Image 1 (cartoon, rainbow, N blue to C red):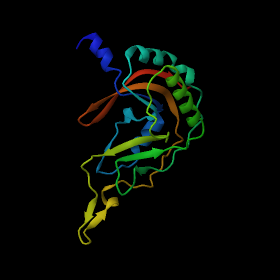
Image 2: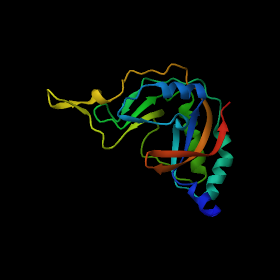
Image 3: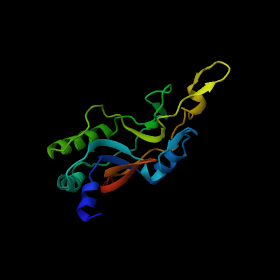
Image 4: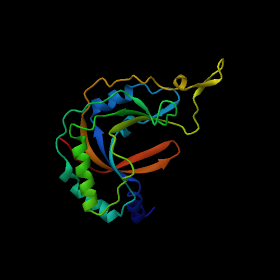
Length: 197
């Protein structure tokens, strides 16, 4: 692979995310997700703030250089109980949602303003719902069946929904990532990061 190809490959499926500190990542990774779900690797846990998609390397470099303009100290956050998204009956993800206040909504707004000012694309088709994905269900996964009743029992193959994070969640960095789709899920590569401290 030539140097030019490597640079171009870095700027596909880009997104900006908050990265939890080590204690928060460890607590997130310790939450139960169930045997049917595929956990996200602990070093890959993050909260997506804005998904950009493919961007030109030159503009990506400018964005990386200006990322620190949008950061401000974040207070400790409020994590809610883990949930199945989009629903417990048809789960695709196990997530830990967060309250949108306490600086998260303001940070997301500043990130979007910067992205718009640079003329970069941003995925606007859904509102910002702050969360960290803990695990994914395979598309082929089906709820277990209750043999005696012959009906779906979604809880039988899913993780407990009452799992609560045991620490006050904190975030270390705001990071610009690229994502590469692989057989066993996406892999993320940090292209730039700014400390929130």
